[in-house]
Image 1 (cartoon, rainbow, N blue to C red):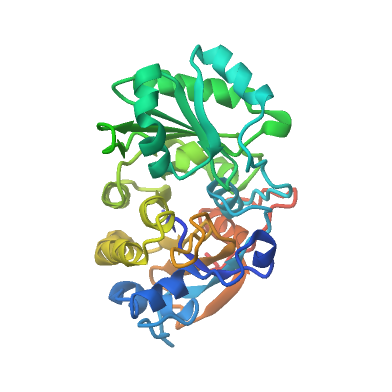
Image 2 (cartoon, rainbow, N blue to C red):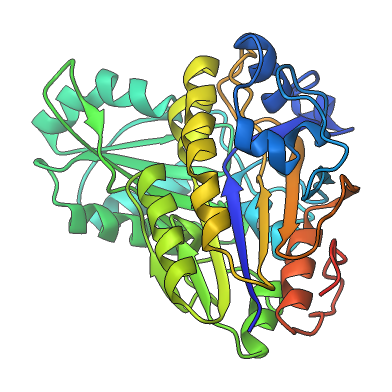
Length: 388
């Protein structure tokens, strides 16, 4: 039976979208600017697959006979965040942007949150996740108050020291916040941000958990399942889709863990769709404006790409893509409104350097058709990149 695997290289954008200036992101080009910042990309396996055909990239020349279809994808949704990006990859357009809170959350959100959880709140403003725990961590430990903060994205983030507030209580607070944040305050995600350490030396732990809105149905995921396929979510995929249409979830603590989980599935499952998110390019390096380690993170993936390709079987489909940008070379530490990269490889079908300029929904449409699913209709965007 044919199988499909989509790996989202989180925040590895491929150049500003036409409306990027409206979002303050004119000139953003995560891949291109990282390539220039490090003196040229050193990604030989991605280069051989066709990465240099996506856009002009220093150190990564185009390959006229590349085996993968390469190109860039346009986002229809009004957003530049994880939820909107992943949802649209699976055919769900977000026509109205999720709400954001540049001045913090209003009383009609914070007051019921404090009442529901029985704890006070610190911060309540946009902040860097690493800096906010250094600024408020000691007071949090002394008072037991939550550290609540947001960003340029539609997120309600709650930080808590794992030795001050147990993880399950933190997750319970996130569930309470998710129930409160509806209607005009329906943020894309509520995120648990646990940390450990001592004052001045706090560090976030891998026990992050996202609580998303439920996506609209039908979509490509539901169509894939309706055709009798199993959907395996690796990393934060299940969180992003609020568990909807994910049959088996494999949360991960690092990109290495995510790659290993993906390989295990490709080596062992007979059918279905493996959907993976590798978050470190975004979480660790994009938001910290660190192009050198951003590149090193891509190199770590590049070294494992041959293992992934070897695990594929005749008739399998592999798509590498992204959900937004997070250009580490610009002054902003936020996501950037960019094209998604595209590398689509079908075992036994050499693309011979073919270029595809399409939209996010093409990813889901391709996987759905590949696995024998019917188009979900109701305006789902996208068309197949490669015919089954």
